[in-house]
Length: 216
Image 1 (cartoon, helix red, strand yellow):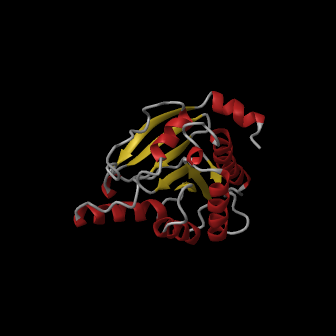
Image 2 (cartoon, rainbow, N blue to C red):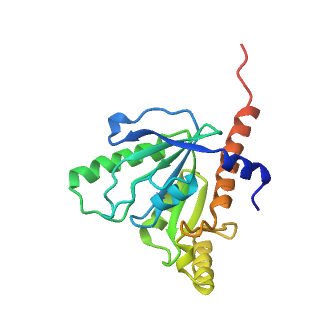
Image 3 (tube, helix red, strand yellow):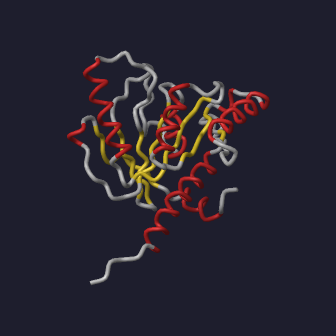
């Protein structure tokens, strides 16, 4: 259930593109909490981000799957945290040298990023679990990054299809998982996803405030 506090925050939320990263040399330490958005190309990631922010063109929607090749850092206020839009995966029609560069950038982002507090895994509710999605799940679990599974294009699935897909992902993620259904068209799941995002950031902030400080 979405809390009244979260609904109030959502009404006054501003999201702005602050950084765009293409190469490993452009990576830098960012102390603010970061929540990554990842998913297969053409899964509806840009549409989800535009829906979440009430802006039609914040994230560019390309007609060519896999065209976006940058990490895009969106600053969220209030809250002072980043949503980091990762390139879609699943389309490898790129030179090997370029894929190697991106492999290094993504490895650095996931394994050397102490500010990464969560991963929104964006999935197509019309499809059963895909190999590349499950590989990303395994990696997130290996580095202990909390997962927020989101099943997009919910308006294109009937109730039976939703139930089957939901059950399949619970089998992959474990009995405590509760994948969220989302539709950029009907805005289903928007408030609930903001609630989950704020809960993640709040949990990290609370842990930092309660952590013992060094004394002289």
